[in-house]
View 1 (cartoon, rainbow, N blue to C red):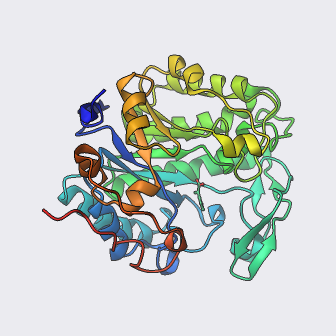
View 2: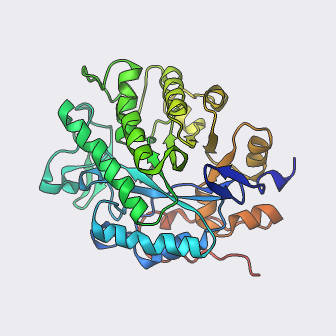
Length: 361
Ligand code: 8OZ
């Protein structure tokens, strides 16, 4: 198999992608005051415009959806205005960029919440562990379980986020349905003990995710909406009693809705160590007719194998894209890769953000 496969074009809905390499969504905590993206954010994404597709860092759709410092939002006018230079810069550099829409649910703390109230979730179950807050490290609290009649309001926040993404000049949106945030908290039974239409059966647990997807499709059309899922993920203290059944149902339902891609965070040794069950991608691939993006520590060889063998259409890279603004060129030519620096992943300034060198012309 040659690297030509990763370098081949792909038609993703109306978007013609020049290659199969996706920049994975990565939280970098460099938004400015008011959770507004800065010019530095525009520079960072524009440097990476040779990706087939850029998926932005997770971006909250509401003030209540925040659980980390310095993450961008898409709910205020200032935030929409702050994203516009980002999309202009990426488009000016020849790229394509979709916004990842996010609500953290229980992965928050009163210190992040307007009015200091409890964060919301499907059920009042605290995650194990601690989080970094404006007041230092704190144990997670038990969230407040959403009332049934509050749920349409949260779906509406996602819908407004999608509209705002349109105004900000994005090429589409990705619903963050992965990694233990609010839609995933509804989907998996370790975090959802509801007895209403949003809990119990897998059909009910998937309802919130699917209602959001429907709202995003209303705004964008299905061929500009993707959904990210983490069927094997244990991050943020996630569990499910039957992940294969849960995620087979979710992927089938998303296929029926017609979303243009599913973006899978694949499981590995870390998830097994944390007691997780690996849902093999091969079990989900046949259930979804449109594009499949896979993610999980891929290197060039494994990416070539998975795309070349037709197991996925595209591969997303996190750390490698963070450290190599010209990753497609480097993979194409076999050039050496810059090593990512974990000390500058989350927060800070240009160091470890926009100062990773590209190959010289
Ligand atoms: C790392 C640190 C903070 C947030 C995710 C949005 O896991 C995240 C995230 C990752 O999806």
